[in-house]
Image (tube, rainbow over all chains, first blue to last red):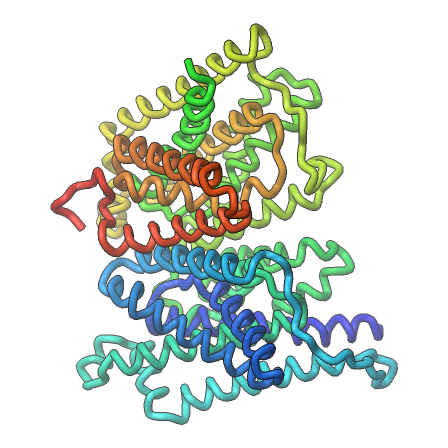
Length: 288
Length: 294
């Protein structure tokens, strides 16, 4: 029983990370209307940015903020150079180009930092017990950061004027346009948020495990699965779905082994598409 | 004939089979298959495992084609009716899961160490005769596929799949069910990938999971996009460009040995990525494509 609870807690933490990545996918999908395969490698970029920032400033917090800014800037740059020229073409063009962006980011990271795994220098903290359940204080911190990030995104989306405009564009781009909402500010904000959220996910993943040029790409499938399960374009759904997938992965590990973790998210993806293609909270239109 | 040219020709033929399958799926029908390497991998491992266990090679080749199709079938059932980018994500996930399976099921696939000593298809004669025969067999498969593609393009089936690519709603309103045709195209393309994988396994003689990464899929994508989507001549041209690039990057290592192999891998990845971006933005019709369309 206690080991079940421990797996559950660990699953919630990794699920929040998946949820952040899924949130980035789903935001881009809702507003820019394509599946962004560069999300995983933006995560990696954020993690390397944070590693560099940490060794420069000596503080994990400052390093993390540098990684976050790096992720946001790279996403804005990708928008300006790649996705904006493609915005009036089929979403397939943008999807294909986003694979190109993903490969390019990974290639640059591989050339600059090499292919050896890197780790964040973090203090080792002894786990403590609560009612017999072993709790990793670091996991709690990661979950806290993830929840704080999510809260910030939802504050921006629901309590600020630019957030209201973003939701209007997501809801109906033409109606938003004729209502006088300029797409430019909306798109810049979208890409900044999507890049920053992906970067935070990458940094947390890097702190929880290791950082290598491939680590973000491997998160792409769970991130997509979370976005689809949550109902693509639905931010709250993506986060909840991420937690569900994270918990499912951890709980399945004793049965299927560590290597098949990613296969769990594929299974979830197939099941959702088979049973309920619009996801938990998705709108009915536009899926089939 | 120069042994080097024979080797390049064989590899080019293997890539061409992959590219012809993808061109049928994406170029003619509009299916976004991001997991082509998964079917290639299924074909390679099927034929490698069966033939090392003593099954005759013609049978193991047929099994490779059949198993690749069998793997594609459930994917098609689940995702072919859904939006096109869902199909892309599902196939990408499929290829990653295939790689996971061949990595972890060591009892069957020998795990990360891979399968060595896969028997060659032609065992008689000297090394050069074997190589020429292998090249001939690969090119024969390519030729059959090319002729089949050309007939498909001119057939009612070909007009139907091109109509599906151009306007699925219109096809549906005429009372035809696009999903059926898409499924057939998916299976045909997977069969080509399976055969290509089997030829690859027997030609190289050694396969391991790290040869079947998504990068392979997108090399093929780059080839068909560069050459010109939907055109057979474009597919051939694209594969030639891809081979030129891959071999050129090998020569670059000979000229500049101070570049470590891992950096070279990163450079290849970056160039393919950049090519995907630039071609999608500036020349989506490819080098050989229709100049008037965009």
